[in-house]
Length: 263
Image 1 (cartoon, rainbow, N blue to C red):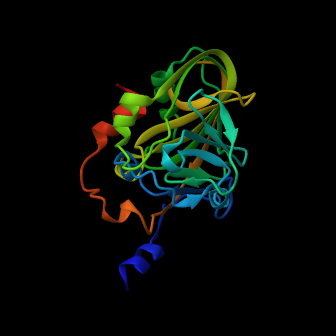
Image 2: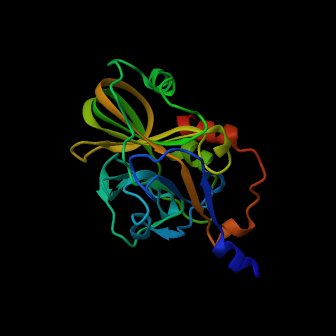
């Protein structure tokens, strides 16, 4: 088989043995466009339209062609968070170089204590998960006493690595007493290299005026919904710089700095 055809046919599906869950057949899939390591290395070329992306999920996150802001997918709508922290609903033809979505059907609904910060929320929720070897879609909805989020600026080729963009150009927002939701995923340790092991959440305010990649939070009264996700589908680009990228290096340190927004 020719390399191009081989890549075009490459659809990685990981299915773990679990009882039937609330979503029903085909809905408990984390659908991912490209690899986070490729994004870290500067592959910001869009390989899938957001219209196609919504055929595989109604909730999730990612970014856009040229790294043009943060993506929040909520209720089947794809929002771009610009450099002012303002969400914009995007047309179906908009391209994405990296995204993760699923059809959100909660299996667990929990109410954490008010006042938890982000590290405390992680500890509290992880103690209630059935396993750390599964993927989970997460939605935290309600009042947030504090939210710290960021967005990233549009880039031009040749693209710099994502860590360089974060160090030199990210916009950081601090909001107080805001209603909204955090959406994203908790991924197991073996997701290293493909996605973000651990937590990756983006924020969208209830009035659709604020959003971004979550850096920190303090909870008010919120509800946490968890969707156990036992299938993973990764669709890789079949053209562009991805085909010749060296993805053998360990980018864990860069990922940690990017996720935390560290300069």
